[in-house]
Image 1 (spheres, rainbow, N blue to C red):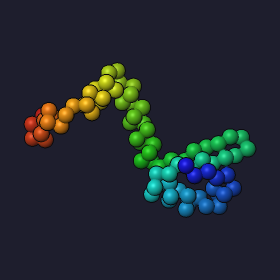
Image 2: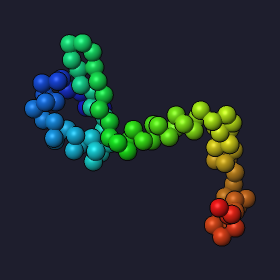
Image 3: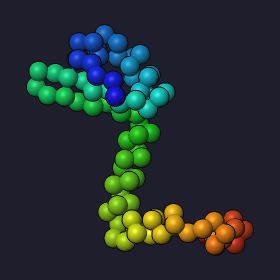
Image 4: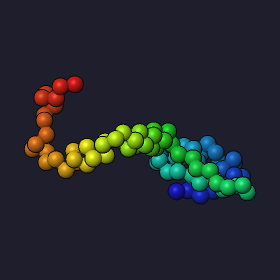
Length: 82
């Protein structure tokens, strides 16, 4: 995570935002009243999806079960009914 203060962030905002977007590196911006974090839209969407999935009862267990299923026991693409 990149750490900077508000003054440096303001001076280098375009470069810092591009770096955050390109490399998904969060920016911690310190101010007199506290800190703020800037993350890429991709990271934000991933966090929101994770929060949603973990809020669905039983979803975490289903995901873990799927991760533990040997690939040989999985259906092929043409066998999946969407």
